[in-house]
Structure formats: structure tokens, C-alpha cells
Length: 272
Picture 1 (cartoon, rainbow, N blue to C red):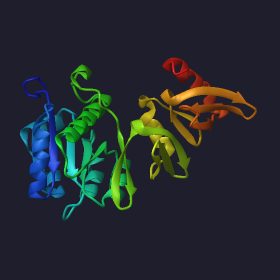
Picture 2 (picture 1 turned 180 degrees about the horizontal axis):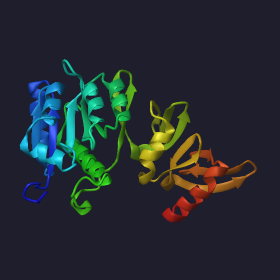
Picture 3 (picture 1 turned 135 degrees about the vertical axis):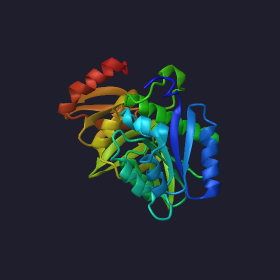
């Protein structure tokens, strides 16, 4: 497609069944300088109809092999088809749009499930402009990583700190990846350790390892994932190698199979 028929800027679909919610969502999206067009749908069924319809620009994007829209910003709880059910349908689109949920109170369990479906962010209601702008940065980072956008990295402020939703006393708390000191496997779950405590999430350690590798996290043991930047010492003892996290705050074992890779990562990153 030519530049004229494919102008720069994001095309996003906003989905919310409440008028006030839609107005706030569309306003925040339109105020972001990277967003060119906001398409509105007032339920999930209508959103899917738009994505499979005959809108000229969307049809051209579909024919060119691009995502029909760059991103979908959707409420979770809607009458009829829910936002979660819509997300499962969107995973079948090839390529699929980037998914962001706009969540209210008491939706933490669904937010965790949506993260497993590939959602890149969860924006709590009501959403302010700075929070929306950070979500847009995650959309751009995701699209660049998939090779689906022409955005120049220099044109985008560096803000690719993924968040992980956790359920606490019936509310959803968003844990920034940058606050995670280490991760420990617990069956099919993972426990995230931060300076403020720990949080159990329904995500396998192997999945976090794959998602966070480019952010500097490295597997040191079948049970542990750590950011290389926080390793201050690699020591050899009677039971093999272990690492020191931070200023002696934690000692973690390093398995034999992961030792060579860890040494290579430390050398490349100049972490020690």
C-alpha cells in the first residue's frame, strides 16, 4: 500500500457499553499524539462486526496482511458477549490486534485470565491521560516487536514496563515488571517478589521467561527467574553456584545447566 492510503498513526477500536465510559475512553485515546483514528463499538458483538465489515480502510488493512486495527481497548463486563469472550475470538485473527482492557473494581480474576490471552495492559477506571499514554507506549512496543508498524523507535518515548495484574482482597493491583526482584515457580503458578512483598499469579514461569527475556530476565534454575541487572555476585560454594540479589537481600541457587548461559549474560551486560 502507498503512504497516502496507509497514513502513519494508530487505528484503534474502543469498546464500552456505557456512554460515559466510552466518552472518557475515546477522549483519552484521541488526545494521544500516536493515535490517528478511534473507532467506537458499544458492545463486543458490534466490535467483531466492525472488524469483519466493509469499512474501506479496515478492509484494505486486512487485504494487506496487517492487523485490521492496531489495538483494541475494551471494557471487560458488557451485556451479551463479554470482553473476555471477545478477546478469545481476537486471538484467532492473524495477525491479531494488540489487546488492552479497561477494568473496574472486582475484575481481577478476569484480568489475570486476559493476561494469559496476551493482553499487554490493564487500565483501571477512571483512566487519566498519563495512564492512557503509557498504555499506548506498550501498544507501540508490541507492534514494533512484531514488525507490524513503521513507527521509528526514536519517535517513541521509552516506556515498555509491562504490568502484571494481581488480585488482592477483591481488587486488582498492577505490579510493574521493573519492581520484580525475582520470580519463583510454584507449580503452574509463579510468585513475584518485590520490595513490598510477594504476589502469586496464574502464569507459568516458562511463559514469563519467554516474555521477559528481552527485558533482561534470565532463568538461573528450574524454579527461579531473575533480572541480570540485580545480580551483584555469582559465587561458587560446596553445593554449586549461587547468586546474590541486590545488597545481599536474597541468595538463590544456580543449576548446572544454566550456569554457562548466566555467565555469558553477566559478561554481555557488564552486570558484575
